[in-house]
Image (cartoon, rainbow, N blue to C red; front, side, top):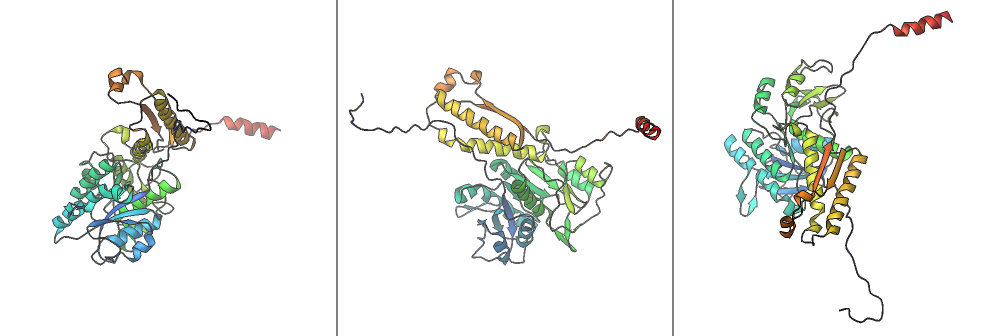
Length: 381
């Protein structure tokens, strides 16, 4: 029964579609070592949030992998970096264990520490790597972490030849991994190739978008390749062609040095391309996180309609800006029976089509005499 009131009432109705903001994608998770890093700036065996990478470089020390990795990233762009600083062990096995990480006094370390970033900083890294520290065990843990965080990892195959690189690639089947090989050079010194890839990925996300692959954009700071890698734009029978055919990304020289390769290590052809995996991850997290407000609301026609329209509006935005070819959201009646709804569940479907990278462009060239007719006519006139 309404309470008598002589005046004005304002009833707030919180219905309607919600704007959906794309999640931050250019956030790097870097595992590194440095025995002489500034201890007041970088927390040992912990994660540190870096918002000023140039300042972080001055605090990184000169030992270990930290300085080289931060420098390689900063040459591409100035992203947010979450650094997990670990100690070098007494031998390779001990260092690997430190890089993989564990739990010490209630804090996770190494790669495992990235899982705690959301609770500590409010967001998770989306681009993972441990440049200069890669081996099979480290890469496996990076992949596992990437799968948990819906992130992507870049790692250099720790081998000496292109044949070994492709054999090493065959040990992985994860869509969250891109393998790169060989080392780049800066002057006469080897550079952490994966760090350049991580920085380039963050740069592309910021400048172009997550729908563009790493391939074929000039990399800042690389001045050479540690071993000869033959390449020709029109000939697939080269070292670069061999590596790309086996889903290993390499470095070529053409108007600067560039990563050359679009493919992941996925065993599923649906996620063969780097941007297919990242599109799926970013769309899933963007849509899920935008609808936390709907959890525990009443399941009504209005609630379902608002969710569907919010998602479709976001798909239209992504299509109009060239991030997707298409996408659509809907409620499937068959998936939402009485028992499902009664149990507090609502199933909403959506699909999307990512942008395929133009990996193989073919021109069909023909020689013809039909234009001679035009020449004869011109001469005759």
